[in-house]
Structure formats: C-alpha cells, structure tokens
Image 1 (cartoon, rainbow, N blue to C red):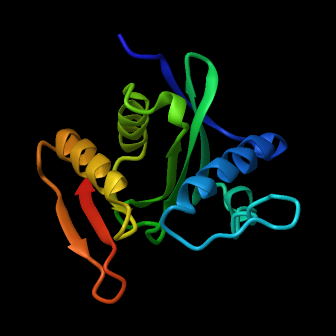
Image 2 (image 1 turned 135 degrees about the horizontal axis):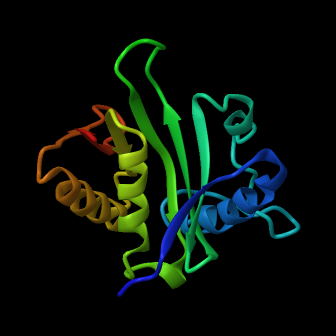
Image 3 (image 1 turned 180 degrees about the vertical axis):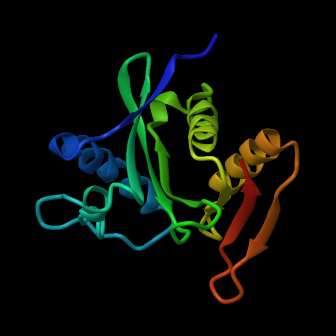
Length: 164
C-alpha cells in the first residue's frame, strides 16, 4: 500500500512552505531551462507567486503531503470567466524525489482533478520527457483515454486537455 496522500490549501501565513519547495522544483528545472543561482546559492523567486494569495477565488496553492510530511506542491489556476463552465490550468506540479514512483503524484493529481470539476489543461516543457510520460499516463488513466493533446505551434510544448 502506498503512502497516505493529502492536499492542503496553504494560507498566506504558511506560504514559506511553498516558497521553499519551489526552490527544489526550480532546481529540477535547471535540467531543462537555463536557471542560475545567485551569489548566495539561491535560485530566483518564483514569478508572481503573490497572486496565489491575492486572488483566492482563482488561484490555489496546495501543499502535497505523504504520510503527513511535505512531499510536493501544486499550483492550480481557474482560467474561465465567472459564470461559464469552469476551466483549470495546472500551473505547476512537483513531487520531491523521495516520493516519486510511490503513487504520490498520481493520487495528488487525481485529488485535484476531482476537487476542481471542469475542463483542464496540463502543459509540459517540450524537452521534459519524464513529465510528459507522467502526465500522459496519469491523465490517460484518469480519463480512460478521453483526452486530447496539442503541441504549441511556436514553442513546441505539449498540453493535454480533458474534463474531470
């Protein structure tokens, strides 16, 4: 049996847990993007992170826990206009290495899709093949294959579109 996975919507008073996990997330991304550490060895602050607390009806910062301990994060944004069918974008999703390949990401993603019913878009970098494999598998299972994938015409990043 895998770890017990929980999602915690992080209040602004605890935003440091998201900021700290984003350092590990950005570190992983140095494999795919040219991100440099500053003179203190710190990676850049995540752009516009404040918006996740400034717009609580539209942006949702989640801590992913596994067996009670911090295991990752998810940043979700509602992208539709008020009154229309809900649409969501998985802005960022990250699981610490320690918890990868143990079902934590799969369970957390399904929990988010279930929590936010509507249309979804999930995008990966064109050169991040592990993320592409992960999302195609997770979304394929979640939707029983009922999703569409499109590639950005200029940047080449793949995105999956589906309904939860």
